[in-house]
Image (cartoon, rainbow, N blue to C red):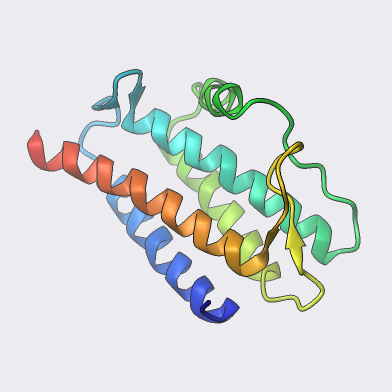
Length: 150
């Protein structure tokens, strides 16, 4: 497995790509998945990135984290629904702020295991960074495919 710093660098790069694509997004209402637009997808990613940031910040500061609770499908839709009122710019700002919190805390050696959601196993920092990078990368590829086809 790659080092924490290497994984963070990789995550930073995909986050920079995501932010760049979304800053220049011609149509946030373009359908990416059957029920989700590009804007919905950003809400989904922001919801999970904020959860990751809260858990990391809590752990780095000696607080007990409060991971999300619920079925994955329900949590995914809840995240989209609760951010549907945000402008694209506000959602991007929240995503960027969450990522800044992650960057500020993820290299803390006190972090060993990070919760994902209640009822799920915890992940090492390295596993979690890898999973988050893959998650963002997958959705970003799907957004880019839609942009190329329009």
